[in-house]
Image (tube, rainbow, N blue to C red; front, side, top):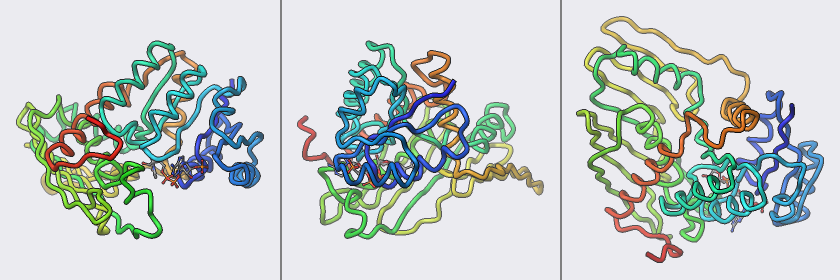
Length: 326
Ligand SMILES: NC(=O)c1ccc[n+]([C@@H]2O[C@H](COP(=O)([O-])OP(=O)(O)OC[C@H]3O[C@@H](n4cnc5c(N)ncnc54)[C@H](OP(=O)(O)O)[C@@H]3O)[C@@H](O)[C@H]2O)c1
C-alpha cells in the first residue's frame, strides 16, 4: 500500500521533508499546494511531484490524498489543519502544532470528531538515539534522573529570517526553537512540571529572541532549557542521573548519544543516510495503515503538555501575539 501525501506551503521545511521521501517506500508526495501558482509548479517540477495546486483548499479536496503535511508558519497551523480535517484528510502538522494550547485542543477535538489522524511533526522523538536514551532512562541505567539541560540557538538574520521575527506569524524563539528542549524534557522526564519559570528578552520586532526556562517536575527532576534566535548556541542536551549521565550532541537532530558511567563511555550511533525525518514519516505511514488516529510516541498528551509550558512561559514574560485576543 502506498500512502499519498500532500504538502501545504512550499517553503524551506517543505523542501527538506520532500527530499526525505527518497528513503521512503510506503508513501509518496503526490501533490503540493502553494498560495502561488508559479511557486507550486516550480516545486512540483523540481521534486517530480505529480500535482500542484495554487491554493490550499484544492489540495484538501483532492480525493487521492490520504495525509497532508502542514508546512506553514505556526500562526496558520490551526486554520490549515482544520481545512484538511474538515475535508477528511489525516494531518501531520509542523512544530509547534499551534500557537497555544487552546488552539491545539481545538485541533485534536476536530480530529477526534472526524476520526482522523493528527500528529505534531516533532521528529526528534522518533530518532533512534533518542528512543534508545528513553529506554536506558526507563530501565534505570543512570539511576534516578535529577537534571536535564538542553539548549538550542541560531544566529538568525532579521532580513533573511522574517518569519522568526514577525509577531503576526507567531515568531520568536520559544515557539520556534524552544519547543525542542521542551519536547525533549517532557519526553524523557516523568509527569508534568509543577513549576514553570521563564526569563526572556523581547526584541525590537516584538517577539522573544532569547529565552530560558526552568521546569520543576514532580519526582525531584529539574529541566534547565535555553533557546535563542540571537546567537549560535551549541545545540546539546545532557541528562544527569544518580548513577551516570547521557550526553546528546545536536539533540534535536540526534545521530549520537553518549552514555557515561564513571570512567566508561558507550556510544549510541545512528548510521542513517537520510536527515532523519524519515523515522517520523514511516511512523505516520504505519499509523494510517493501522487506522490509528494518534501516534503512541508523539501523543496528544505530550503535545498539549508542550504547549501548556510554552503558554505558561509566555504568560510569565508577558508576551502575547497580536491575534491572541484573550
Ligand atoms: N521540523 C523541522 O526541522 C523544522 C525546520 C524549520 C521549520 N519548521 C516548522 O515548519 C513551519 C514552516 O517553517 P519554514 O521555515 O519552512 O517557513 P517558510 O520557509 O517561511 O515557509 C512557510 C510557507 O508557509 C506558507 N505560508 C502560508 N501563509 C503564509 C504567510 N502568511 N506568510 C508566510 N508564509 C506563509 C508559504 O508557502 P506558499 O507561499 O507556498 O503558500 C511559505 O513558503 C514552521 O511551523 C516551523 O516551526 C520545522
